Structures are given as structure tokens and as C-alpha cells.
Image 1 (tube, helix red, strand yellow):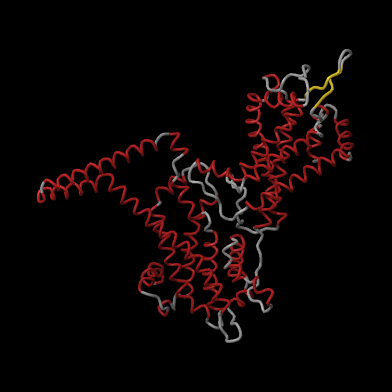
Image 2: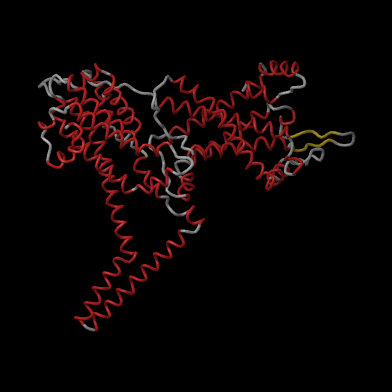
Length: 538
């Protein structure tokens, strides 16, 4: 608020008067009132945006889905709150922008008459708050500002926010220019509508002494542009900074107790958090903690590999490893189904392109020769239906190839493939964590609890690697098309990262147990798959 007040009252020709007026205004009641109103709006917008933060990004496969996603019923309250908060906040800031923007009405007084006229500058500044709210709402979902991406290098909260602040100021300034571009155009075309409604409703007259803003001369006012730009930038920066603080807070690592003898802490253990399917954020934090534990926490690894009493059973390791393998298996099953779907589509397209047609026609001709006129008629009907199918396919491809239709209605294949890997960060942590624990257990496992699960771990990783490799080969052309684009979203790299993590994890286990691999009870299929990873040992 202080920076906004300093810049809005800028007077470089009279610096002493500028600074004196700024210091006097900072301690005025009006500034603190505007600060309270703006802060309340920030809190309300942030509170209504909290339910929409997610660790699973929304991947819209077409432009229509992208537009309709903004109109979901669950998101509409945030839309209303953003527009109202933008209006109220811009009204509060307008009271600090000078006498020209202070009030909605002005007193036009002369020697012969006195009348109340509309202050269009104030109206313009307040209406810009509606555009700011709409722009923040759209960018919140389209630019995935609600996506909780976990940083690769964990830092303190203040360090993360400080690192984002400089980029945030620059991006908010560019966003403000984009908002003003569309807002100026809309006000130039339709600005007379709110003016006429307010003048008729409140019995105001038009200010004939001022140039109308919805005119070419009015649009060229530098003072109006500067004050509106400051207002939009200030609101966008404040709301974006609040969202950034929420993202930093939610992605902060949590340390879950591995074992707990107290009853009231048993539901807060690592194994319980890993099994929490109804809260994806908690499951993400649990897998991140498991991966951190596996890499650099010796004491917690010993707790993980300890025996539970009574009975001396490895209940903790069995629960944690079982839930981790389940997370990997779920994605493995989805990828297997997608691979079969892709292969079936390829077979169907080749059939429609003529291979199936020629085979069917040949069989029909043979049946005609042996079965007579009735079979000939049946074959002719089947043949005609199959030409119809090819014609419909050609028409569909022709319509789909139109520029407008292809951009609006047709699903993007690279976006459709990204849906599978948009939430694969837990699988990356699970794969790396399991391999780290398995490799370090070679020297740390006193009771041999990991050996009982080692065949299952290796078999799951081998199956997962095979499915991933097959999927990458089937979608190689789509991947090349996506990588050639100018700007790629962050989640697009998760697929390659998952594949490389799985491959390096298998090599890590193979390198650790190189002299004991033959003693593992692997089935023939897994032993054959493991052979390609053990060739370098020979």
C-alpha cells in the first residue's frame, strides 16, 4: 500500500513536495481504511481459492473443455468473489489516487447553477477491478496457479517466497498490461452503457468539462493509464503473492512417525498417510517423506526395518512397502489398458484404410461363387455399408482438419496422453524410495525383512518399466510433436522423469545384489526381463 501510494502521487518535478505529501498521507486515516479493506478482500479471495488447490493438474484435451472448465459449478463462487473483491479493492485504492479519482460524483458549480455530475475517472478505475478479478480467475486455472508442484530442492519458506517475488512482480506487470489492453477496448465500445445507467439511476448529469473516456482523446490520457495500471498491478500482485504463500505452505515437507507406541498417534504414522486415498495431498507428502527417509535418514530407516512386538513381525515394513507397491501397480494397470487401446486404434485405422476392405471383398467373392444369388446380395449390402464407413471417416477427417474446428473441438493427442502422467509424481517417489531402501538394506537390514519383499519389488519395477517403455514407443510421434512446441508445461516432463527413475532404480538394486540375484525366487518372466539389466555384470 505504501509503494502504491508513493507511485500514484509521483511528481518528479517537485520531489520535496512529493515526499512530504507521501509521509503525511501514510499516517492518515484514509490510508489505513483502504489498507483494511484491501486486506479483507485478499483474505476472502484466498479463502475461497483454498478448496481449488490440488496436486493433480487439470488437463483439458480441447479448447471447448478448457473454456467450459471455467464454468464448473464448484468454481463459480470463486468467480463471483474475485469480481466483487476486485471492485471493492479498486474502489478503496481509488480513494488514494488523488482528487480526480476520489469520488463517483463531483459538484459542478457556477454562478448560475450547481449540479452533481458523474466522475467518469472514478468509474473507470472501479470497473477495472472487475476486469482484474476476471483475469485473476482465468489465470488461476488456465495457468495452473492452483497446481501444487513440489520443488526439486527444498528450501525454507521465506527463501522460496523471496525467490518468487521478483519474477512475480514482473509477471503481474505484464498481466496488468494484458488486462488493460482488453479493458480499454471493451470500455471504448461499451463504456456508455454503465455511464448512462449510473446517471439515470442516481440523477447525475454528464460532466461536459471533461473529455469522455470512451473516446480516442480520452483513451490517450496518461494520468488515467498510470493510475489504472498501478491499481491493476497492485491487486494482481497481492492476490498472486497470497496464492504463492499458500502453495509454499502446502508443499512444505512433513515428517511422519514411522512407528508409534501411543494410541492417539497411530493414525498419524507413515503407513496410514500412505493409505490415505481420500486426500491426495497427504498421500503426496507421505511419499515425499518416504523418499527422503530412504535417501538420507539412517535412524528412521532402522525404525522402518525393525520388528514389531509382540511376535517379532515386520508389520511396519510390510504396511509401508505394500502401500508403495500398490501406488506403482495402479499406474501400471492404467498404462497397460492405454497401451491396448492405442494398439486397437491402430489396427482399426489400418482396417478402415483398406486392408480390411480388400480381405472382406475377397471373402465375399468366394462366397458368391459357392452360395449363389442370396449370398451375393448379402455380400453386396456388407460391401456398401463398408464404403459408407470409409466415406464417413473421410468426411469426419475433412471437418476435423478445418482450422477453427481443429482448434476448438478436436482433442489434442499430446494433452490426452498427459492425463495419465499428470499425477505421476507419487510414483516417482515410490520407485526411488523402494530402490533406495532395498539397496541400503543390504548393510542395514539386521533381520532380513526386506529380503521377503525383494522379489515382489523387483518384479513390480520390471513390469512397470516394460509398460512404460512400450507406451513411450507407441506414443513416440506424439511426444516429438509435443516437444517441438514453444512452451511446455512442467508436468509434461514427468513422463520421461518417471521412466528414467524406474530404469535407474532397477540398476541400483541390481548393482547392490549382483552376487545374489540368482538366489532370488523370481518367476521365469521376471528373470527374463531382468537379464537385460544384468548383461553389464558379465
